[in-house]
Image (cartoon, rainbow over all chains, first blue to last red; front, top):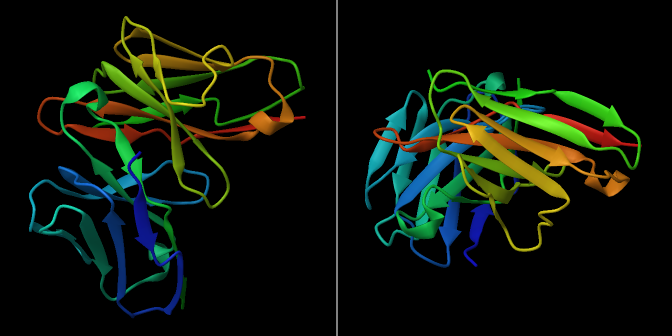
Amino acid sequence: GQQLNQSPQSMFIQEGEDVSMNCTSSSIFNTWLWYKQDPGEGPVLLIALYKAGELTSNGRLTAQFGITRKDSFLNISASIPSDVGIYFCAGRNAGGTSYGKLTFGQGTILTVHP
Amino acid sequence: GAVVSQHPSRVICKSGTSVKIECRSLDFQATTMFWYRQFPKKSLMLMATSNEGSKATYEQGVEKDKFLINHASLTLSTLTVTSAHPEDSSFYICSAFLAGGINEQFFGPGTRLTVL
């Protein structure tokens, strides 16, 4: 089946630093999504990307849909303590019997030191 | 908008009992809901796709008789863990698919199941 490789697995940074994480896939996706999960909570959608090459921002977050449709990255600028959590990428194919199903990356655990 | 709730948030039960977890889309109708299982510091593993008015579609390796899914209305799906055992202890998360426009999954807050 499809697999997403997300890296890095974890990051320890100082407040104010920028963060970058990425996902690569063995196959093509039509949609790339980035979620954040706080401890004991469900994932919350941060950014959705629908077109190859698309670059989208949400506040201090910026994500891009790779041209090859097999990768995506998420950048967080000027990190703050509340950015702590697990970040997941997810890919989706359109249509067919798997409509709506997501494939998740392994997650990036982000720790921000004040 | 697009709020999904889960009940209960935490449940502790004895081995051999059955536990029901509810997933509700509060402000939209969802013909499709998904059930995931998550181990500590691990990714979400899709268990099954729940379709309103029809049988759920289970992922490979997930026992359908062990994890019963019912999607009786456009706003409610339930997951019943039957004859629970300690290895069923996990964080269970549902999502509801908001189609027509947004076309994305919105996740519930999760249910922590502990089987003694």
